[in-house]
Image (tube, rainbow, N blue to C red; front, side):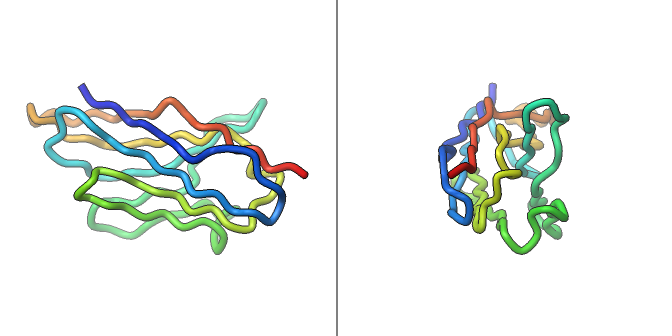
Length: 120
């Protein structure tokens, strides 16, 4: 079993910053891509940023220049630094990870989601 536990969401004023964290734990052999997605009310889930273990990061156009994804592979943790937040960034943010388990099986996992609200 593998769990993804997110933290760092909350309420922030426009122009403010938040840092999300997502820690993976359990029967992990390795983790390939880790990333963040979000879902606003009444909308589908969309990619925010993804970071392969050895490749190029990818950002949604709407967050380029404002959000930064990073990883600590030793801690199996991915972060999302969000600056210059806008009301349209309001959503539930989900962590995602492509995990190779200790049994050498590749499984895609989702976190439970953390709410980010940008409002004055």
